[in-house]
Image (cartoon, rainbow, N blue to C red; front, top):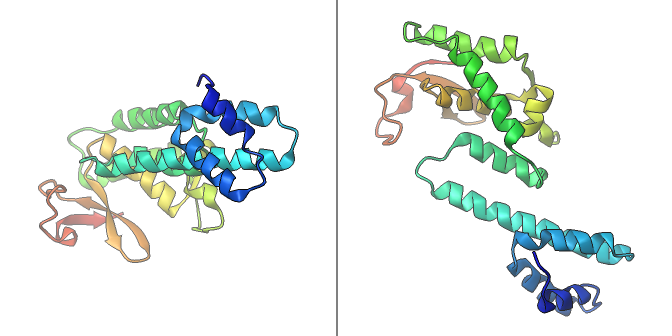
Length: 220
């Protein structure tokens, strides 16, 4: 973003010792949105004071957080809440500069390899066997226990990078592939468990008028 007179003045006030002044300055900088982040990064590189650098880092974090919050709100308003997009947004909380090209390429590779093994003559159990075999045998995905201190085990970018994730992350990847391949697998709301179910083809996922447990062929 091209720096204007107001931005220059705001940057000079970042080191103001008065917290009230800094809060006003921060609010105005945040109003510029994420486009101002490169300017702040340049300012950080040319700043000697460690305290000022910390303030700049805080501003950058707030800008990333605001941008991510806005994207989550937009995602939540969509009629179709794409699970892969949601997983990427979660990963961006810890990795704000995350690029998505590699994630989409890896997902597409998995989708294509699975699609080549599927056909309309397979039974539901055979379809699930293909999905499971591709993920855990061909792709060699590994599972770990759910440990909330190990945050990277929840994130799709690290999961695809290490080919390892916890039950929730691996379940989400399974659901993403199922959705891309039109296989009627969904998560079942069971307290304290992440369980997937293969649903009968006539179940209307958009209306939810029936108890899903009665429309589940089997659990995975």
